[in-house]
Length: 248
Image (cartoon, rainbow, N blue to C red; front, top):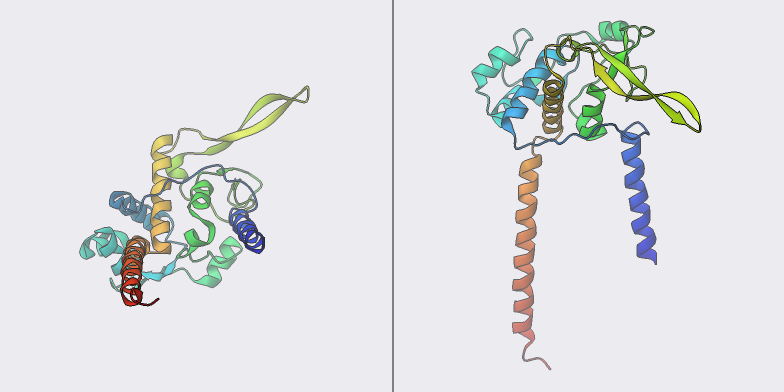
């Protein structure tokens, strides 16, 4: 009974953590990230550096480690993915925006995103990037259904187009009511809907990698460690039986 209570407590804790990470509500989209997909990670790095790194740093990750892990030649990475002056390949991923100015412009200093995927999860990031919509009442003219009253512009709007909330008239309790059913871009973006979804997934995939660069290696070592434990257990039991076979 005690073990059952402990198990239930752990389960409740995990569920609570998941709900808090998603902002207390169910997320509209699921991100099927794949850290084995180097092409996706490279595209995600390109998009992040071009659209996100101007405001958001990843100061706990180095360019060199990123380029090596993603299969990007160092000279190519330096030339195409580093936009701060006098930056060396061994430096951390930072930008040149003064924190005081950023706070004045956005109302708060843009957060460092090195561990954002570990904090909120891939589904949250993917849903967030797909959930901007036009809201003239906001300072930057947009809002977000996942992060209400977010204090940042929709930096990917030129790719997606201008996103609007879509409503449908549904019969609820005998009355016709307008119900929010999703967000639809106006078609003015550089990418189609499917291409934009792919781009957002690539960025999410990249941020998941940045949050734990050794994740694939850790998983590989974990399986090897478990296999070692199984083999050692078999040998230990066999050795024990051999030592005690004559003991009565």
